Length: 351
Ligand SMILES: NC(=O)CC[C@H](N)C(=O)O
Image 1 (cartoon, rainbow, N blue to C red):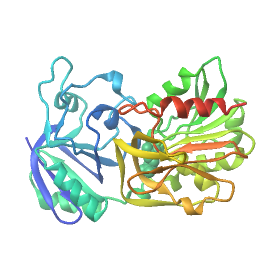
Image 2 (cartoon, rainbow, N blue to C red):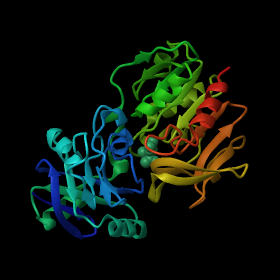
Image 3 (cartoon, rainbow, N blue to C red):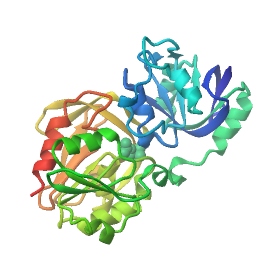
């Protein structure tokens, strides 16, 4: 089956399709992770994006549902150099894509397209499976809305509040598209979790009598997370506030700081961050927006920065008991270096 990937700059690449015939368009992003392709594809923060892997072989250990970070694939499409059709025991990625009506393309020089994305900045793209009409793919790419104009959070947030009971501290979680392993990391510490939809009001959140507020990861522009920004504004200083990834950005916005769109973002399981004490950690990341550290108000302290580009990777405010990170300490996929220090620190801060 033919497939074609079109870019907004007019280039198109013809390859071999997998999954089902059809098309999608959105932002083309690359991940440098070497494993963890199912964790990434099912990460709700990839909603609205076509996910391209720089690692040349994807799917070589099949599809294991234990790795899923949400019930299904959230990325719009999957772009690979080579996809494995015969993993040893588990179902193959192409078979899974076919059964679940998903779009994939293989035979693409993803490293070249990654270099191009790094030079040009993130582009809109369209993937058509079942066709090699490159001109049409380019047209679709150019017609795709900008990610900052798309309401992605409601697509992946829970519809109704729900509880994941634990014997420990009560944490209200604003679900902007939470990854399963964040739930696991919090539950492992005994947390009694109350999850709320993205538009829950402070009063609705308050009904569970939380001892802390946690803002999750999520897709798209953090400025669209207005419910979460309001919740942080409301509870800041009253409850400890924690955030991961979009949660970090939301907390900064609630404090009056600014976020910006990065040229091509950080996505992968090999992103080095430096704690301000000098220690380097290798982290999992998936973000295209960042907090402008220079706009953080007085009282906030930068806790982590990215080793590659110096961008903000975490900050805290001791007086307000606020602590957030831009990277993903829950990993999955990726190294577990920061799971214990970050989640232990967050949990210990709940008094
Ligand atoms: N993983 C996330 O929470 C990503 C946050 C936001 N969507 C960004 O791209 O920066």
